[in-house]
Image 1 (cartoon, rainbow, N blue to C red):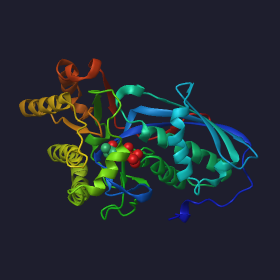
Image 2 (tube, rainbow, N blue to C red):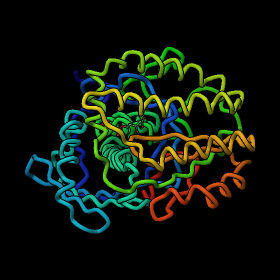
Image 3 (cartoon, helix red, strand yellow):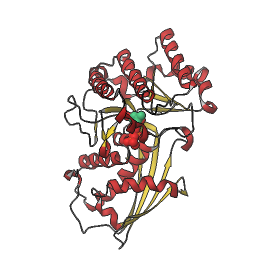
Image 4 (cartoon, helix red, strand yellow):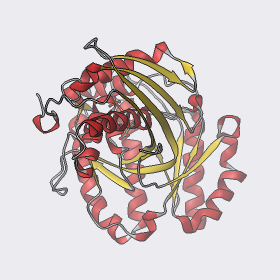
Length: 361
Ligand code: DP6
C-alpha cells in the first residue's frame, strides 16, 4: 500500500551534487517492539529513550547521473564494504516510491559508529536513521519549502523501512511509535515525540550499557520478529505491550520510580520470554546477563537505590537509573558488575535529544 502523503511531486529541480552529514543516536525501548506485519508495520506500539553517546555518523555525497538507476558505494570506518551493500540496497528498494529522485544519483556513503562495531550493540537504529536523514536532506534541497515537522516525520517513516526501531531515533528525549488510543497523533508509519508530560527525573536519566557479549547475535532481530507469527503467546504479548504503554503515561508524569522499574523490567523479561517460547526457541541472554540482573535486584533491595535493567535482543544489559543515583550505581558497576562484562567493557550513556546535522548545511 502506497502512503501518498510521503510521495513527493516530480521535480526538475534536482541539485547536481552535494554532501550532507548526520549524526543519529541509538535508542533503548522501555516498551518493546517485537513482532511485525508486512511492510515494517509493528504488531504493537513501543516507546523508547533516545540515547546520546551511542550514535552513527553518516555522510552522503550525491552526484547527478544520466543513468536513471541509483548507484552507490558504502564505506564503513573508511573501508569500502561491499558486504554491507545488500542491506542498504534493500532499504533503497523499500523507499523507492517515496524517494524516486534517488534514481538520478550516484551516492558515496561513509558511516561510522561511536561504539565499537563488535560490541553487540545493534547499529541498525542509529545507522538507518542517519541514512534516512541524509536522504531527507537531499529531498529538502529539491523541495526547500518543506516544514521541519514534515522533514522529521518522513525521516522517521523512511528510517522505519530500514529498521523498525530506527523510526524512534530521529527525535528525543522519548519517542513513541505505533498506533495507540492514548496517543492521538500516533501512527504505525512513524515515531512521534512523546506528547505527554514528562517528570524532571526522566529528563536526565542515565543508561550504562554493560557489554556482556560482544559477539554477533545468533538470531537476527528480523528472524526473531518473524517467529512471533507462530508464537502461542503472541496475542497476549501484544496486549501486554499496549497495556504497559498506557500504564507508563501517569508514571512518566509523576516520576513514580518503583512503578517505572516494574514495567521496564517486566517488558525486558517478556521480550526474552517470547524468544524462549518461539519455535525454534532461542536464548539470547548469557549466564552473566542473569548474574547482573540478580545483583541489581539485591542491590536495590539492600540500598533502596532505584536502579533497574532492560535488555534488547541480545545479552548486554542496559542499567537505567536517575542522575541523583549516579554515584552509587557507578560504584556498583565498577566494584561488582564490571566482572561480568567481556573484557570489563561498558559504555556510559544518557537520555538525548535526537539526531543532528553536523555539516554546515
Ligand atoms: C528488541 O528494529 O532491530 O530492540 O525492524 O527487523 O530491523 P527490524 O528490527 P529491529 O528490532 C528491535 C527490537 C528490540 C526492541 C525495540 O527496540 O523496541
